[in-house]
Amino acid sequence: MTLRCLLDGLLLPAILDKDEAPLIAFDGQEAFAMEAVEAIFYEVVEATALEMIQLELANYRLLRRADDFQPTT
Image 1 (cartoon, one colour):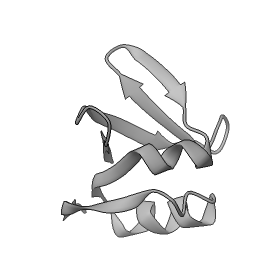
Image 2 (cartoon, rainbow, N blue to C red):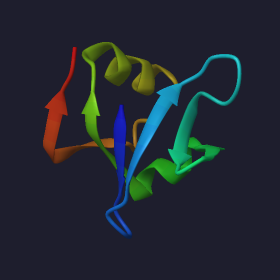
Image 3 (cartoon, rainbow, N blue to C red):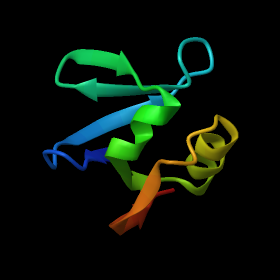
């Protein structure tokens, strides 16, 4: 999936990881665990339907779809 930071427009690839923190975002070569409350500063640009469901189940309800959201398979 791809996230966009609402503060600076930066696009970040991200994955859901059940072994570590639920959502891991990548800023270049650095990875960071995103807390559910931090999601207010990001939007989903690209994700599968399953990833969207998993985000909600992992309490990332504040992470909304972007206006230009693209579903992927």
